[in-house]
Image 1: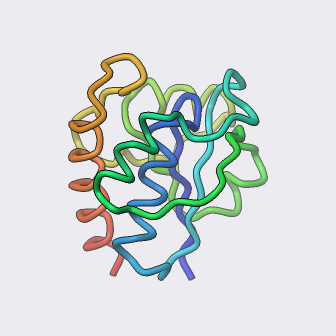
Image 2: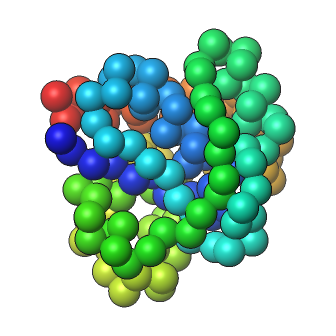
Length: 137
């Protein structure tokens, strides 16, 4: 079974959103997790606006606790999926390698924590998750 890790800055918005969307799209055909590159949000639940957008689109989620990506996880997962070049650079800085890293879309997906545009982030992540699923089937 393929293992996919979604990684963003804090692990409270984009990466867990992608995790739950991808699980929903793929019916748990993959092992899917999400992590942060920073330590800023470690231990925190999904951001409340992340929950709101998932609820709005009927995407189920469970209890979440933000965690930072480790070298062990990087080695264990087949795909490390990021949302922008900033995330890619942070993975390389944190892990020392980015050979497994792929952006979810060719364009950057803006961080809704800063833009406050959770709907656009959701739509971009759905588009990217659908494309990723087609590639991996």
